[in-house]
Length: 626
Ligand code: TSX
Ligand code: MN
Image 1 (tube, rainbow, N blue to C red):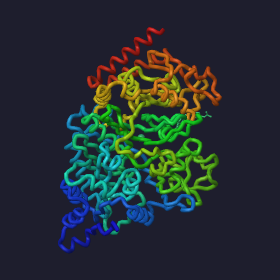
Image 2 (tube, rainbow, N blue to C red):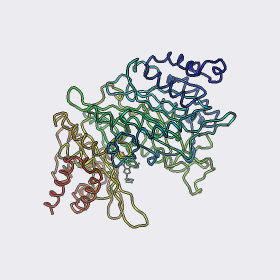
Image 3 (cartoon, rainbow, N blue to C red):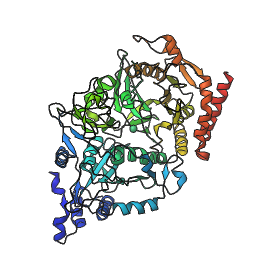
Image 4 (cartoon, helix red, strand yellow):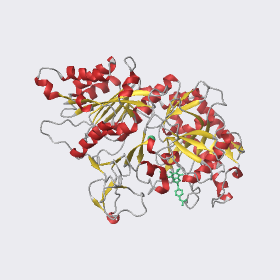
């Protein structure tokens, strides 16, 4: 049983033995790593928890903590006949999403954070945070979570330790990452690790009852120190704010490590694409939110004989192998997916993944003890209790689930998980997709003319919001490589790093780069492309490009498929519509140029010359075609 390792502060205090001494004795049963022992010791002194619990990642531990949360009202166990071993959870209404305005990059120099991040001086920020963490875990248990991002022992994987006072975080981390003694064994006595300190920021005084979702309503900080590979998170218990392995480590800190070490830490899905003959390629893809990244990662092709399998749905760590190819691992072990909109129609594989052993946060709960969210079924259940604990019926006039409601579920349960998804050497990437949500201008698919041009396409990734009342349609927001909230350093330097990576191997070994857009609309506002499983037709063209078999039209914006090269068999889509999806909208692109220049201007002299050159080339090419 792991709970013998829990030290009760009260017990030892009266014996004159300090918690720190006692916890050190226990800690030594888990690790002899002096850096880890020292850091945990320091954090115990700072946060003064009542107890310290070293997580071993076992099923016993998960069950114990989930049971504890059922007692405190954090969790409700769902009906085991409907959704075995699964829990329903509602957060505080003030703690429902990542808090970008409270997210900071603390590098020594402000220009190392760049214009797209909130910068603070590291020493000043540590001063503020130490004040907040002082006594922050009073009345609570401190959990020490050793976790690996990536298969334990993989040369691409990295180890982190998260200290948290939230059992919800422990259970979530044990689904989303690899947790436990094997990680400490891999860490050994000498290695270093990413330090992550997390507190919900709500200490409990004697006799003060806890609440189902402790957090700090007033004060939240999500802070990265890329230079020292440290994370400090305070005041929120939700998702990316609190599960520090995901956005904070695997993207913000890891992007800075990747810059220093010559690899890529990206906000990308990874999929395996197999043709009817059984030949496979691996594809990575970066998309901003609300573009259906998880749906693409688990896509069910409509083209007969084609197969998509999932390697990852959110993050890719990519390093060059000895053969000069770029190998990717999914550093995560689970999916933390947006629930609303997920259905048998949009993503049957996700629906099958979440049938058991899952945590559901801010969904609605049915009278039978199952979960529900918007679009899960055509007809909502007759009666629900919504995410705000209010009775809900279809005519309530509000949403039953919070729009950012989530499922947390093991990747291993995905029916289309690729057998090699945990291969320590990763999978060789043949194509990188960039995409956004654009009603106009961007064609269905466009292959870059070169690595540099591909990086340019990634750097101008954009989605548009349909501005409502103002009448101004299509306000374009740039989200380069879908990394805007996740790049741990100056995004101009990040572009330079991408360009440099392209010189690390021969061009035949580099992945080809494509820009896709599933969201083009006609003049009446109707989607031109059916999307979802039909995207397999675009993936087929990508496959044929990579294996050297498909025809292209060279244009100033890139290489477009000849309309006949897209397989439309069995699809009710006219060649004329496809032509619309694949034309170069010269006027539209020219109108885009000033927006691109404006977007680039913010990076000043951190913008690499290569990208400036690409804008100039694009503009000249478009003008020539007039
Ligand atoms: O996930 C989406 N994908 C990728 C799937 C692999 N969505 C949902 C986006 C929100 C998360 C899409 N929505 C996609 C898509 O390719 N395309 C669209 C737009 C669309 C919506 C409805 C239809 C067609 C396109 N309906 C009919 O054609 C009937
Ligand atoms: Mn994401």
